[in-house]
Length: 391
Image 1 (cartoon, rainbow, N blue to C red):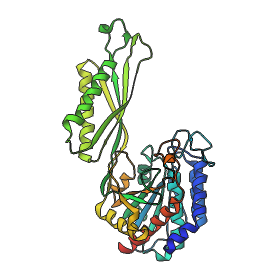
Image 2 (image 1 turned 120 degrees about the vertical axis):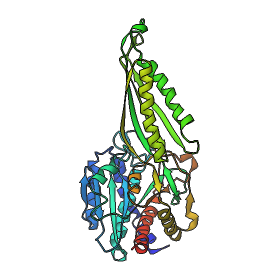
Image 3 (image 1 turned 60 degrees about the horizontal axis):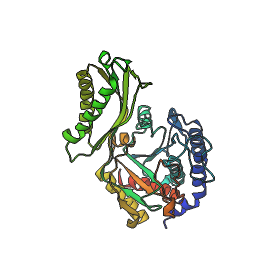
Image 4 (image 1 turned 45 degrees about the vertical axis):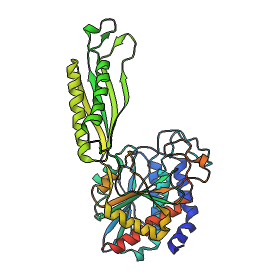
């Protein structure tokens, strides 16, 4: 075991305490006042000078040195759901850290502790990014707009996501190239003419148009997109009317688009607008389409991914690394890898009992905390090695 890993294991109780403190009082979206306050307090106690550069977005750096700048990132927000894990440090409110962002934050705080103790080994600068609202896909952009990639200018970015199943505890999953899909959420509002359900000929039924629109939109994927390019268009919500005998004035459809290819992404977005508007016109209605946020595909840059794979292989052992498939989920870390070379890996934290393993976003999910010091040491080692070999 390396000295760095030994030190991380010595810090395990501290890292676990950080995780559990954050876990007990989860906060959501971009409003994370208590989590932010705790992270800033911890960083100051380590000797950093953290800054809240946007609402609940915290940045700290090691003592600046000549050389490159590597950004390490953790998200901090929870989910609006009840926790039923049964752990004695479970959520005390109506939110829950079922996606493991409490673990990410604790891991990055652990890495910050390790690197503060080893600043003399750094041949460059490490920037720590503690981000709000990953779940809403707005936090990374807010921090980019606030200057997280500047002063000092970032040259590379690395992140990790914890998993409750699919990877043994302390093992790392990697994927070169497109790893996570883009995500674009949309709302289609179809305007008709409301009236009595007994006289549809005197009205214009927006529900009928919504049904035709739903079917027509699926043809984009099945007949217009290259079958070699994975893409998903999902309508997850349709709302219209309040009574069985009234044709409503309007119908609202909400959904999302996901793909690994930016050209395909833009094509689907454009065609969705055309199909929604022309389908509505065909039935004497009008349709408005609004896109509410979105992120590009997360692409693990080839050379950067291979380099980090090498450092982790040397550090943990090649048997602790596993190539994993791309997924259709989304991550706004993609906005960082769209600006600089970077990579996003997974770290396993499944519990020993197979019956107790759940995926992220499940109210019963439990993460094996033995993975936390391994994650912290992996972050720190990758930073030390990357700065050493990129001057």
